Figure 1 (cartoon, helix red, strand yellow):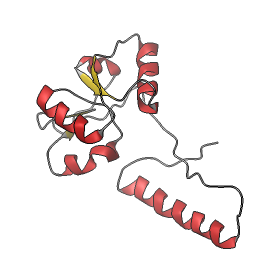
Figure 2 (cartoon, helix red, strand yellow):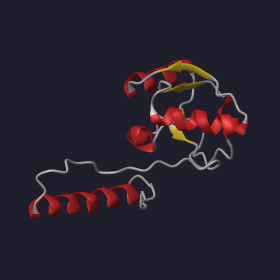
Figure 3 (cartoon, rainbow, N blue to C red):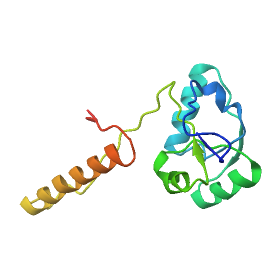
Figure 4 (cartoon, rainbow, N blue to C red):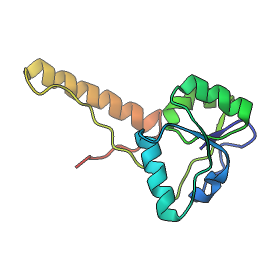
Length: 140
């Protein structure tokens, strides 16, 4: 959950009840929103969605002008968090997870292609684990 400078980084959201704050979220067909709605429903909580916005830059501006919150992947706001424009409150229960996969064409595979995919996966895994503080895992 992200909000303006008012909240320090160390505070955590221990359950989705904190999402009763006014929220600016993606539209209902976006995967993050689908996950949030599903978890909120399972917890018997109605999200207080005041606006649906896809564009990240518009979401930033509206969060500031409307004094609203958003629930987004950390990477979308990492620069704004680093420069103090926004602060984060990680949601720790229920744990929200997403599986990311590198997707590519199946035909035309040869040695150089396989080597490139191996290198890309290593780079992405390192970046995700260290810079974004995401956890890597086997999607199986």
